[in-house]
Image (cartoon, rainbow, N blue to C red):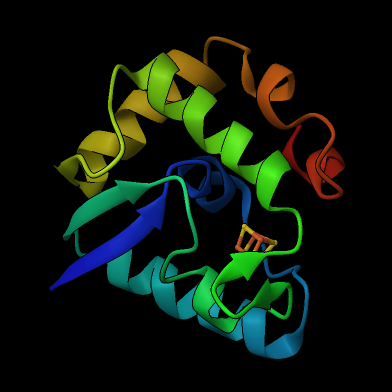
Length: 121
Ligand code: SF4
């Protein structure tokens, strides 16, 4: 199984604790987290993905904050040295995000204006 994952969600999953935009969304986040724990191949994107699929902010495949979150995605890809449409094992992507962004203290410069940012410190 292969999943479509927008790049900035590589950060979100590190901090997700069950809070989200709706009950259906957080349920779906837990389900995705369990699937990703199996270390599947993922295709990295800067557009709506398999997480956005159950989000109330997803309007016909486009996030209501599209411009802002696409910028998060492109920054994550750049810092990880990856491109849109890269296929990579989830754990390899997770390790790059951890090493180059989270442990390097660069998360806030990417998504410090996200409404959930306080949960990710
Ligand atoms: S807020 Fe936007 S980017 Fe985040 S899960 Fe919802 S649709 Fe996707």
